[in-house]
Image 1: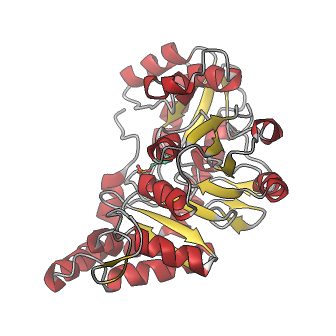
Image 2: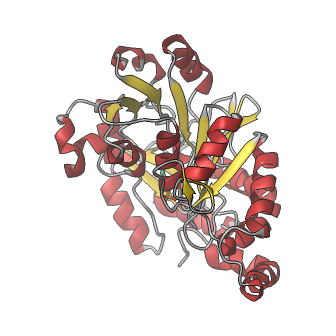
Length: 364
Ligand SMILES: Cc1ncc(COP(=O)(O)O)c(C=O)c1O
């Protein structure tokens, strides 16, 4: 049985009429940068997340870079994060000349191990950057407590967790700044690159808005060194439509995630995701730990089931981060999980029939 890993085609066909109308209206207006669609999107995003400010930008990576720029992170500063994430998390830190300081993950939710953060704090530490991997946040209460004690900023890499909750509060609204991605395959995705930052602080918000537009505070008056980090109006128009359906899509994602776990609960070869009682997951990925990952992966692929490995090499073992001086064995949980994690097809449009086939193939 053939199926896509993420069903973006059915999603587009479902909302086609609404999306096409909005896209054509941008084309006809010829206002491709900023404009009413961007303003509308930011107002809706702030309302959805319940933050004072939502600022759209060009990608999740740029959201992370902007969050560090606005907090004046620079050469020599240390930022604590996890090595078990997409490279953009630590790349943004290195890009500014700061140093990513890795802390291993927990083997439950694959997020940063909060009990190991304090031992990595030095006089150079400026921020903690937890990643809400696979769609579930870390214990943000514990992280914020540590940050308060040492007067650090907290930046949530919520690129996979838009729409998830921790203690009834939305991901992106749990730290100094929340950063998300609207990459097409994310829980809320646009049709290109896009991202957003969330905060309550007026000064931070104003500065982010300037920095993402070349540090400009008035036309051709540049207060800061910035970037071109704007979201374009076409992506905003698409997101305005998709955000209207997002609550419904989250419900469907959760239903599919819970059903996977129920169907796989007696399969001793795999471990299903642990979702904590005080959290919800948006299942950006439905990732299982497998005793014999590579063999299972091969079988699934040859049966027509696409899979993905998020992520096969932890960041401390990547050539790009060799200069940090870490070695094999430094983060044993990350290394172990990288060898046995496997993501299964997940989208709100995955049918029960497709899901049954995936589970039956795994069981076989
Ligand atoms: C955890 C994490 N951080 C950052 C990013 C970067 O987001 P973008 O691709 O929108 O730049 C991603 C996207 O894959 C991600 O999964």
